[in-house]
Image 1 (cartoon, rainbow, N blue to C red):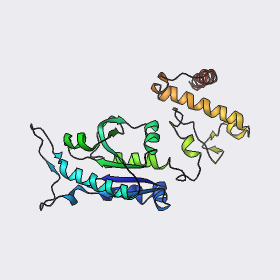
Image 2 (cartoon, rainbow, N blue to C red):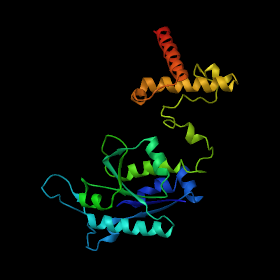
Image 3 (cartoon, rainbow, N blue to C red):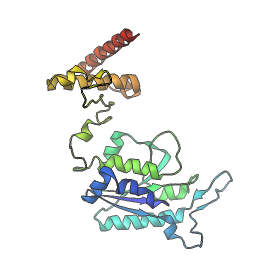
Image 4 (tube, one colour):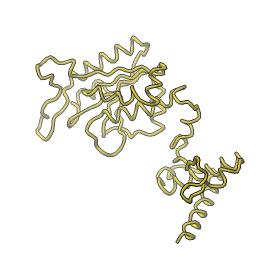
Length: 257
């Protein structure tokens, strides 16, 4: 069983992943274990202070290292009791490595993770140097704290755990699982507001459908996220599919003009 511990001053926020959806079901079925630790529970002043002004001046406040380290100590002890010898401590940080499907899959192989959700202007660097093994960012932007990024990371990992999804193939068919964006999806009704489902998907020819989906994924990636293809060497079949798909797209656009 994978273990997640989260260090956060807002533990109630994590009900979003423990009380709802796929992650709730996976937790109830014992696919992973979870506990949140509040740094305020490890301080003893009347105001339960976990932040202070930055040395050198500047705006905002910085999280004090002591309570964070005490939380990590408690989290690591819980995980050791659950059989995890050395959990990986991950700080959710805009300075971290960007979260990708490949990184989520690597982290999903870890038996235990301690996710630190920072707040305010940041976290005392001495705590990071002493206790953090890895920093992870969910994108090149800033949010109010590390809780939402930690939940994103948890969700991305939990859905990869065996048995978490009703359909074992769902995770393998998701966007980015093969380094490409997903193909377009359709369901009933067959015609909706004058728009019909592509005839190929109604053909019953599974090999042709798989080829169409692959082509659509390649074209969509080229048009929307060309950066994903920059360092990728396409096979002859993929290169041909992409070329044909782009020509078809261009012809369709010309007909609509």
